[in-house]
Length: 75
Image 1 (tube, rainbow, N blue to C red):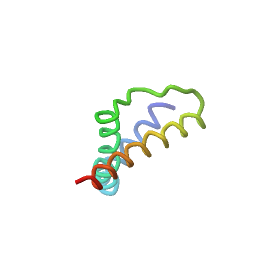
Image 2 (image 1 turned 180 degrees about the horizontal axis):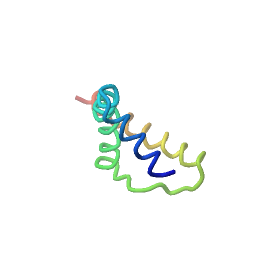
Image 3 (image 1 turned 90 degrees about the vertical axis):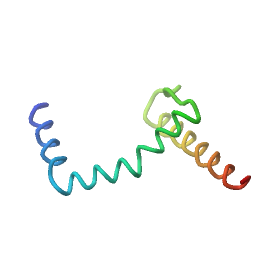
């Protein structure tokens, strides 16, 4: 079952459309996580449970956006 699923995902990523989506993801999503880790020092969640993790994620990214907003306002 796992190998079948893994092969299906590999095929999707290998397709032209999959490669385009994956390339765009690296531009859109990955930098935000890198900024949170580097600038806010985020390493791991301090809560358990899906809803609590979602709330903490929202707070982390809100803090990141506020940091960026403050940086733009003070320049």
